[in-house]
Length: 414
Ligand code: ADP
Figure 1 (cartoon, helix red, strand yellow):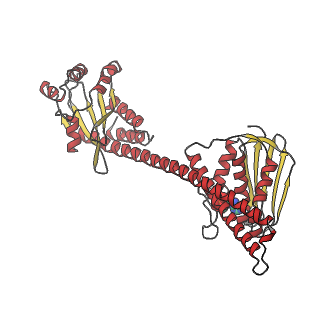
Figure 2 (cartoon, helix red, strand yellow):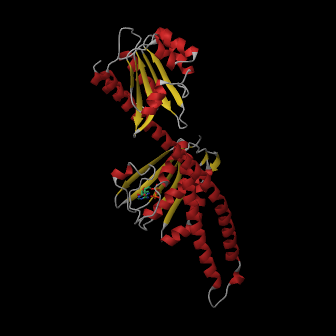
Figure 3 (cartoon, rainbow, N blue to C red):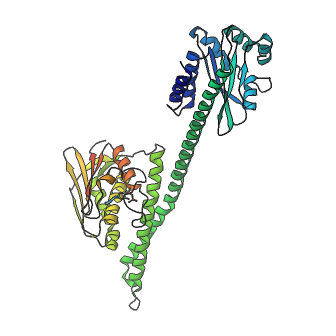
């Protein structure tokens, strides 16, 4: 294989995966089929130690013997060529491995024996570098007694080392970024869970107080209409608390989806009852926003679903119909159709263009500006995840200026 072809093959391998252990293994294979009889790749760890990632040999009969090199990772106490290469950040060429040189680099008898049995002669050690730092060492060796590597071979292997260094560094950064995202989602899930508990209790107490005041006519004071003022203040607090609860729920669910922990707790429920409960609880929201709403539900739509999560999907769809519905009437239908339950939320508002329709079920994707319409862009993403975890579907029909119809289909049994 010509040098350029070799490097282009190496680049292909290096960009094929973000798992650097597998990638470096393939690079070592490429090395031993083209330019060497033996190849080792070592990576530096945080504490300055070295991690032996791969050991390969051209002759398959010697692979078992070569694997023993995993038992002899470079020792900083020895005058080790691998450590030397890492420390200096420059390649080392050993034209011929003399007995003295081998004695020097391998003082452990076992290692000495492996090198001798493999018959390793000429060596090249090159640093794997990225962002100006050495992150590992690539070692290649030939077992031909009459062959020696030259300066131009060092340049070629140096090029390979530079490419491999960048690939390993990118893979490490990627895995660190993944870990940071996972830690963030874990934190979000704990934080939103903690926020939810006191808020649920506040909301319950608020609704009890509101109910008591509504029932207690004696609180009425003619002059300043005391009772109705208190009622409207409490209603507004209830409305804001529900908004807060929805936001916290969205945060909790999005983090649970991300860390793969959106678990369902299915129970026997009547979809019509869930829809009616949500509508009853959203009455103030409808009233404040000036909406007329038509609700039509079959008497019984019994299935096994996670009540709280289905409730959340309905809240998301209904809140969106209110937010984007241009104050025109909203229809909500729940019915049984063949072997599934169907929930339809139809508004006659701003609508969604066909380009945006493809994306609004994705995380953080919105079809409107944040200045005009507030929102996190996660409600539909979560709703879709919840419905799909129930083995159902969520569909959308919409056209700009005419409105949107969201249809949820749920199997009656999951
Ligand atoms: P949010 O409403 O918080 O932005 P969602 O995930 O619920 O997040 O919705 C994503 C986007 O889909 C919204 O930003 C909006 O552009 C669009 N959208 C959702 N429901 C409707 C609707 N009923 N009418 C028009 N656009 C909608």
